[in-house]
Image 1: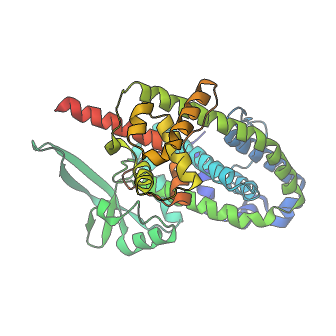
Image 2 (image 1 turned 90 degrees about the horizontal axis):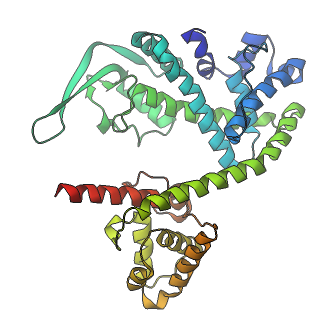
Image 3 (image 1 turned 45 degrees about the vertical axis):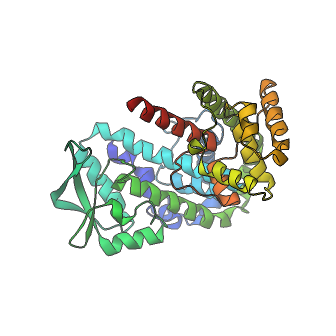
Length: 386
């Protein structure tokens, strides 16, 4: 299979469903939904979605056995996603579908030259009016990476007009991640690498992935108008059957993540060190010590974090106001439940930020225990150097 054919699905998302169906099948949307071929296409798409929702489900490879036009598939997948009521599941499926599409591109690169891969990536960018140009002469910038004068060479291959770049960031709400301070700017252009995924200086590839994430969310929302169509209702019922399996799988994964965190923390016998605590824990402790009432969410965050922190009960007691000593009993119960294989994982960072209003710009983990582990490791690493 050629490199170009592997990218069909990704390139199709630069167009809209009506144009794609008329161009590929000669049918309008309504005619397609009423046609015999629609069910066959949606069953193919549902198999892909089922593999996203349930890791246990095996994707049925139908490319060779069924006459499926892959250019249509991403849009029909988004039609099905638009019918999912559960916002968490919908966003999760979009993320996994995004990764599927871009992994096809990345895995296909070894089969062609880097120049060919770059050409297709730039073509993809310009199909959504990104206005990417190949630099006539690569921009080379030398960056000092230590006090001994060791240099890092940064080579930028493509450029985007500054005003167009700002327009795209505003359009897809990506201004924070792609702040201009991260990139060289010269003669009205912003310079980027093509394929590197340096988190400090995201590439054109990373930018496109973030743009397509937002584009897929928009398309799924617009395609939700079809959810009351009879053929879509049939697949909505199938989604409901997967909901229980997804919930159980999600809980199993959360438990495995928590157990892994606990095992890592147990390797590092750290005493009470608030400087290593994530900001959400520090702020909650400050409120507690100031005599402010904590919400149920804050109480759960603090007690679940301390319960799994591997800090002794005596140390915790010494650092919590005496009038709040009831928290010690909660922490003790959580630890007892752990021995009974009943778990209470701390809320994820996304929940803490959205519902508790606590933000930490320095936190790059998905949950407080993960951030705590990262800070412990960095602390021990610095300690060994001194």
